[in-house]
Image (cartoon, rainbow, N blue to C red; front, side):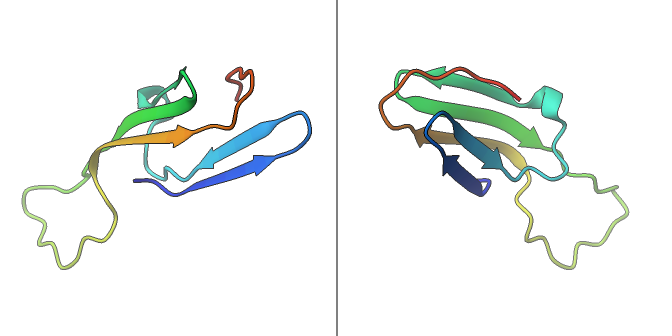
Length: 77
């Protein structure tokens, strides 16, 4: 799961998601009922002749659901 920061003011709830190496056009973000649903994929950029010594960064498909406090929400960038 990508790490998330959630910041709230009187008028706004901001959700910041750390997605380095992920093309924003390949990320889907929707509000479903009382949750923010994020789906995407971090591709593996490794050639066939590469020897992997360590992989700590998660690759592949990811999905995260963040439950929101009661309110009316609109997605903006």
